[in-house]
Image 1 (cartoon, chains in turn green, brown):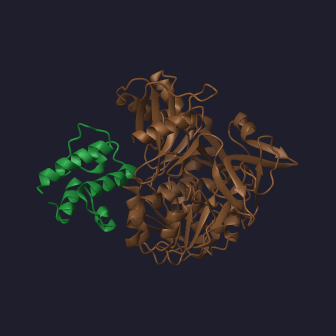
Image 2 (cartoon, chains in turn red, brown; image 1 turned 135 degrees about the horizontal axis):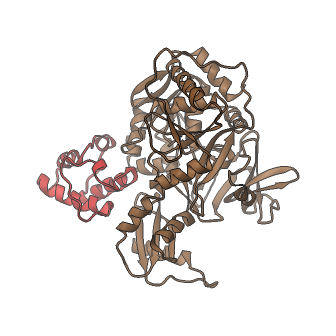
Image 3 (cartoon, one colour; image 1 turned 60 degrees about the horizontal axis):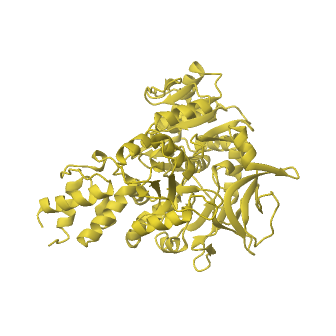
Length: 81
Length: 491
């Protein structure tokens, strides 16, 4: 799966979690840039991403997610089709 | 020895040991107390006669040094969260009679002058220490909890209350020493923070704080692993968030793992025990009004007492007692359900608002009791078991929230009288607030924006629903249980 396609799907997942339909993520976007993406929402977002892409992150991987691009890079290591 | 003298003894015995680790920077006891002395001179210069002094809380050494500076002067500290809406801060300043705020940087709050605590000069020396502190019934701190009428409720805790807590804590036999590394994961507006910084300082141990920005649960896990934490008091929400990853967690150095602030579930804590194989694990309980916590229950695998999956809250600590009472303040026998009422040395003298004190405290045979609002019963082993609430108070990540306070603000914002706030569970099993308006669906963004100016983030609803007509119960009142069922079906 292309990075752009993953980004688009993350946009839908994260937009839904923070209730912002017009959210426009980029690989550089961090949680701080998105109102409502707080500590609690973060774990719900992670859970939703895991379910959506049918993958399981390791704790150490999640801890290294500094921005959306890191999440995309990690998803790419999971062999998405 | 009182808690202040314990801290001084630790400082004298271990001036070069680490007292705090804040965002990977260590501060020794000596460095900490140099800052305490520096801040004390500023207090003495600017507001020597003020009893209540606010502190703008941040995750920095100046905040903790400010707390100690005030405590060692026998003053009363009142934490003020810089992220709280200005209305709420204004209410706290007014109720707490705060004219001065200690802050690392200049802040602009109406009616309060800032004393800047940053810009400390090394070599200010250790604070002079009187041979014996005895501040007794003076207030050590005042914390504000959610109030059902939209105004935060001020709970003062005295030096005597704190002394009693520290003595009772030591009597539990955790054996805290200067070798321990304590987790401090709480905002300083939340009284569990007081145990997490005060107990380690009384024993010459080191306090490891959690950054106040970033992803909290990740930061907690990071600190637990990176610094081999030996002693951690946490809210059960942390476990709910880390549970999917328990298999990866192995904290061999953890000696004591305590949980407080929310219902602790038997299945989750049983799994957690495999992550902390060498730890004594306990569920501790107590409202802010009874100083941090005052009941404890030691968890032994295979023998966990629970009710509906919620672990027992245990028995009172030294100096404290608990009874079950009916609505007429009559004590109920063991086995019967009633409202858990606490008495003893850790009990606050009462709220800042005497009217609220009258509602929550009562006296029988010269003993003063506090009605916790928690329904409980006591089993044959003498352990109290939590069964629910008598009112609409809920816990969100450990924070007390009166659902009626959320409703109060929403009514004021929207002008709608038919709004109900309820507690529900999210996908991770964590408690969240859902709000239901009676009427047709409307844009909720302006409402949420307005609510953000009135209440702290943890009180904001996670979901807003609309129901055309509210169901009514047999008394003609809004049927909250039916509404709860309706929204659970729609989530």
